[in-house]
Length: 265
Image 1 (spheres, rainbow, N blue to C red):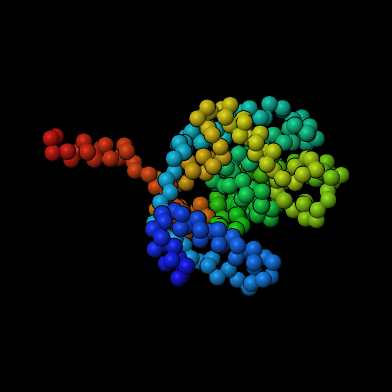
Image 2 (image 1 turned 90 degrees about the vertical axis):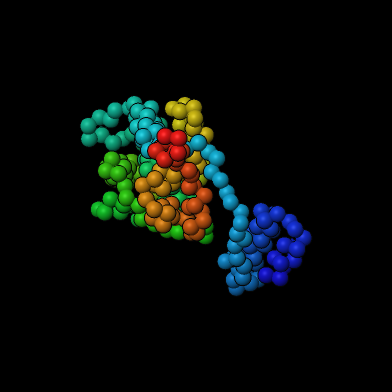
């Protein structure tokens, strides 16, 4: 705290001060990871006064849903013979990616959330999915849409076993088969899959920029439906300030208020 007071006396900007402290947190995390310290003593120190603004264009709930169904229409052009689930490599990937897009659009998950998902996180009988917390986010359990649930049942029972069968020749790490979403190559990383999803979504809507824009849109739409605390829980934000930065002035509501109460009316 004396160091923070010293920095403040130098009259640096608040955002610079926050950067210094965050860098120290990373250093203390390293000391803990290398067993040089027992704990990060500044983990709970937060510099206030830095307001972040969300500058990305947000999509409405209807626009997000259009993304989902347009993506499915683009990626499910291969009808399957009845009772025959032997799929081509391309079809397997497309069906997996369609489910991932649904989780981005309806549950507002991050790429990290999706990568960390395990089969046990899908609660089929409850129609929910459990998201594991991280150092930066809280865990939460989210409702699935009925059509998402049906797709996940098909994926877990019919599609994912084919991923496992094809991937076993590349298996080099223990526990790889616990991951919900698998790849068909040597890498267990889904980054290439996210790149392909990004490319396809840009083709669907030229206003789309990246996956973070989807999460921003989902959270902002939640704020229109729910209060700040519930949105914080749904988004997995550890701090309420993280949710507050998604609050935007409702211009339509403001215009209506002006029209109704303007003294010249």
